[in-house]
Amino acid sequence: MLIRIRRGWELPESAATPESAVMGRRAALGAGAILAAGALAPPAFAQAAAPAMRNTRFQPGRETTPERDATNYNNYYEFGSSKSVASAAARLKVSPWSVRFDGLVEQPRELALEDLLKQVSLEERVLRHRCVEAWAMTVPWTGFPMSELVRLAAPKPEAKFVVFETAAQRDTMPGLRQSWYPWPYSDGCTIAEARNELAFMATGMYGKPLPPQNGAPLRVLFPWKYGFKASKSVVRVTFQAEQPVGYWEKLQSSEYGFWANVNPEVAHPRWSQASERLLGSNERVPTRIFNGYGEFVASLYAGMENQRIYY
Ligand SMILES: Nc1nc2c(c(=O)[nH]1)N[C@H]1C(S)=C(S)[C@@H](COP(=O)(O)O)O[C@H]1N2
Ligand SMILES: [Mo]
Image (cartoon, rainbow, N blue to C red):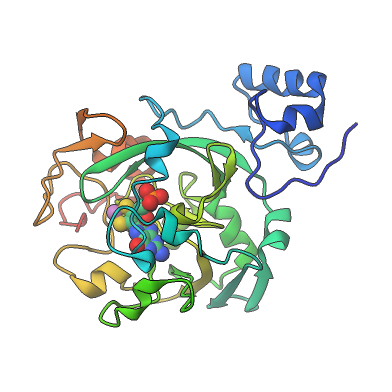
């Protein structure tokens, strides 16, 4: 059997990727057969030769956004406030990279990203992403469930919230010179949200490593929340008892709340949330409550239906 070291972003299910060459045609076909059956990789298979298999539990229900659109229309304020930050973000230094776990954890520690990735199982998920500015995309991400990150961090029972702090590289990020912004960018969630099966840590997209402008080398995804909750280029994960105030909430709390669950009925002061524009097409589609992921996440908010929790 072939044993190989997988890299963080890998995702080899397509026969068109170099992995099929590495795995050999037969192994690639075997992986395809498992995929066709709709089954997840059994743990032994996932640990060994380890292509990141597509997790088919989360069906996107719409077409995948063309890669050039998803990677050239971004929000990454550290590199500027326009949508065209891809070339500026190319300066981001992504290696070496480490992630610090601190706050209410059993043992604060810093983990090199490559060591962290050896302790999680990678998979591919095609997920809908929805920005509060009412644009949306559908992307095949590679990564691992956020619950695995929580497990590695080992929070104490008193920890109720998680904060994701992101990189602040003075020498590569011109946006940091704008001192009125509350750098470093961060945002957070409850521990229950972080442990929800839909919360995801991405290391790749479209079968390749995450490009800098999309949050290399490790970013948060909450597919049922507005995109500003999806912190890019995470360097620190802090566990705490108090509800955190994120970057955008610090700037304008009347526009950006803690929960930020996608809801067509609660308008943002500047954008109706009733419909959304799909990147790469002129199509507008109706917004769905929880971005269409209610079956996975609505129970997290049971009893809060009558509160204005979406902002
Ligand atoms: N560090 C950091 N993370 C960030 C942002 C940012 O400006 N800086 N913007 C957020 C917003 S508003 C959105 S919509 C998504 C955009 O992700 P994308 O560029 O991959 O589409 O990243 C989020 N994460
Ligand atoms: Mo956004």
